[in-house]
Amino acid sequence: MSGKRDDYISWDEYFMGVAKLAALRSKDPNSQVGSCIVSQDNKILSIGYNGLPIGCSDDEFPWQREGEELDTKYVYVTHSELNAILNYRGGSLDGAKLYVSMFPCNECAKAIIQSGIREIIYAVDKYPDTASVIASKRMLNAAGVRYRRYVPTGREIRFQV
Ligand SMILES: O=c1[nH]c(=O)n([C@H]2C[C@H](O)[C@@H](COP(=O)(O)O)O2)cc1CO
Ligand SMILES: [Zn+2]
Image 1 (spheres, rainbow, N blue to C red):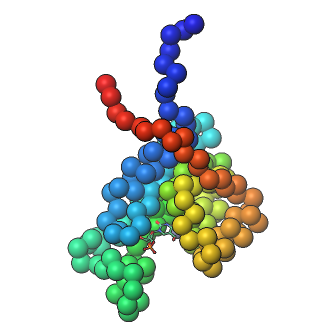
Image 2: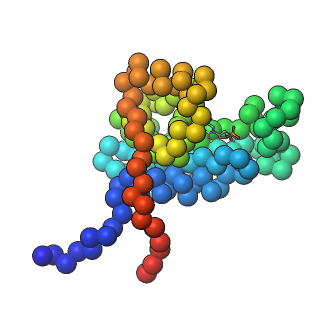
Image 3: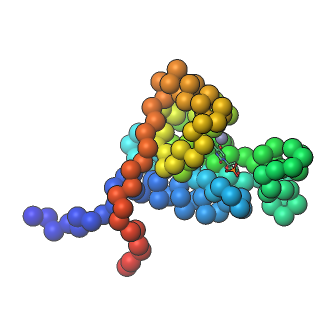
């Protein structure tokens, strides 16, 4: 009987919560994606969200999904997972875990595999039938990178002091 709280949030709730908070920084009007990279001993190593590269103005580059390819966001936006990997300046990500709000695409899967990340915990598999996500899973499976869906507890997380 130590008297400690028993309604504290789990590691998964904590790190997915951080990933989703980061997603709220995104300027993308359609999909806001957040990533949180965590060490094997549960220390946060890096955070990222989808956005334009440094120096490319959020107000000048396009956010639209359709039209001339050069007038869409797709050719300019850095994905949240890649941003989180690139934001890490501390050395190796070998054995790390990635919490991400949306299932990673094939390009992110390549970066995830090459960075040494070994597990992905995702919130939503938004585009499971696309070639990008199918290719992503093929590569992750071949490389032995585990992935699992985050199962929300359903409880509301609120701040209080
Ligand atoms: O793995 C990913 N990570 C990531 O950050 N994104 C970003 C790029 C875009 O800004 C947005 C996807 O836009 P949309 O859902 O409108 O196609 O999410 C997209 C993917 C793959 O779809
Ligand atoms: Zn991606």
